[in-house]
Image (cartoon, rainbow, N blue to C red; front, side, top):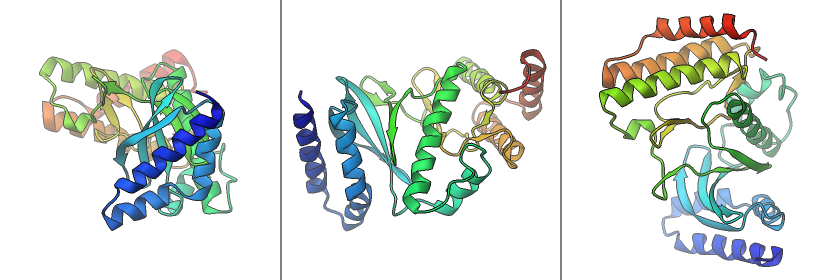
Amino acid sequence: MSRRSKVEELDTRIDALRAKIKDSEDLKVQEAVFDNHTLMDLYSLASRGIIDALGGSISTGKEANIFRALSAGRPVALKIYRISTSNFKAMQDYLHGDPRFGSIKGSKRSIVSAWTKKEFRNLKRAEEVGIRVPHPIAMRDNILVMELVTIDDDPAPPLKEVRLNREDAERVYEKLCQYISLLYNQAGLVHADLSEFNILYDGEPIIIDMGQSVTLDHPMAQKFLGRDIDNVVRYFQKNYGIGSRDEIISAIKSDAKAKGPAR
């Protein structure tokens, strides 16, 4: 497919998505997603060969929509942060404590663009130390292109929608404890919003939504770490009767001594 035909296909698909919208509230959301600047960024990604075609919507979150797309013939997820409806105050709180992005100021778009770049870099950093995350492919302004995690071509469900047997629950819990420690000790990050809502499951746990993840020198890093641990323990205690806050903290400290300081 030529670059021009990719752009034309993308244009046609966006128009088709808009045509399907009947509910006025949904229309507002879609108009917030596909503003002119975002459309130009989508066309740029298509012309560079990163996106071949745009598919249907997978989910609509508080601040972003996720769509199916094709990249080099394989399915990917396209996460588009909405400029007009994102919580900029909350984003700034996470950005300003991060030395990588603490100087970001200015327009709403520049803040959302920094947030998207932060999520892209955090995913790469987590993946590099062996944590299962959606593989980040590319980003441009408020658009993040990443691996689409599926089961039989359907998006993998969040952990909150899965019922595990006892053996699998123990295995997944241990893996998540390992991921929390790896993220802290090797990647030098704290997820800062880890829960059963931000963990996908395809037979193994996959950590998602890392835009808010912070470096260890963020003033709230330790508080966020404690909250992540509490969320994981609460979920597994409530549903499977396993998990201990103290054992996770002990494992993190033990790994820190064995592996040296986080980068």
